[in-house]
Image 1 (cartoon, helix red, strand yellow):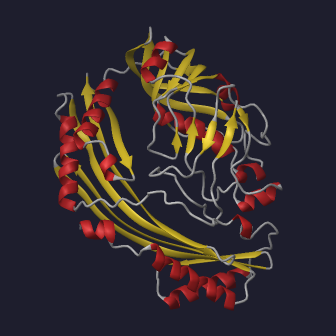
Image 2 (cartoon, rainbow, N blue to C red):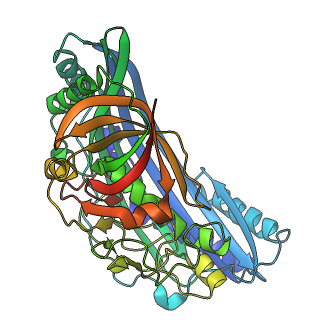
Image 3 (tube, helix red, strand yellow):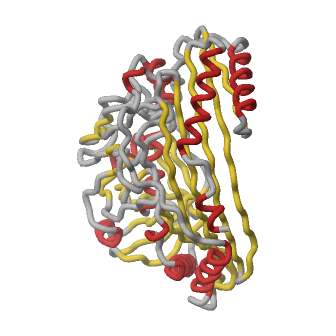
Length: 448
């Protein structure tokens, strides 16, 4: 299983040949422009619950996607069959579909001079030599460590070990063809505890490109158990207004709402609470968001975007002022701007810190709410209205006093972002936004 899960995928060179075949066929069929992408992923996932294997899954997914442009009309097709005949048929279907779509003057490839010329090695490929038996051992050990922590932890939703390796390739009729391999590995544990007849759950996980950088299975289980114990005896709060501290893993989502609002699609559709906000002051003076696509081993690193456009370092927010949107070539044309190399999303956003770790932020907050889980999707991306259910802890005199639940925090993001007082140094690097804990000066907290 280890060899299959980590090694038996088509390498980028083989995928690039499929891309070239598709582009050659599109050229023969007389299109104006064409692009194609191919991927092949293989992975292993094991979940253990109460010491037994609950799920064992092997994945092997692959596909080729073709898009053609003719007279400003766009047609797309895909296939999971890598045979030359199937790829040629996909191109034919895409060309046929283009005859029925409406003309769109903004459609087409990104400009040829923006294509990536020299892709750096971002060190994204680190196969994990793990088989099903070893993955089961790790999952069982992880769960057991959490269950052994305290008798009040009496149930579990299991521990899961996952390993994936994939290859990607992209090319277009500008002559650009590129490919790379990448891996992702993770270990997650979810535990349940009970006190006075009330049950609570919490979890912890570790994730990395390189399995050697994962936290130990026992540590993951213990941290999941510690977090679950911390929720037992949760109380409700009376409705009030107080400072709110988002943990690092939730702070990245709080910032992420702004990134979604400055995405090109939201801008040209006029469905954003940050509409036409470039050069406006959105955050406090110290606040800064940087995009750094070329960090080695990072979870969102990329040498080029989904259109082959070379990625580059840039500052999205400086001194609290929004400097740029997040654009693909299509959304850029709709707005009369240039692509920012973000077709497919952003790459490694770094939110600069101006404070110490979470403990120091608790001391600085004094009295307020520590938010550790958000419930529901109460964010209106058009108006900026924000309302989320919360699980966390009430803080007094700079120290955690007791757990709280069944409360809601609310406000409007245009008003909340300027109230950010501190960004912690406890940066969470497990995702595409690297951010520390965020302290917001005051929010409405609705409770009993």
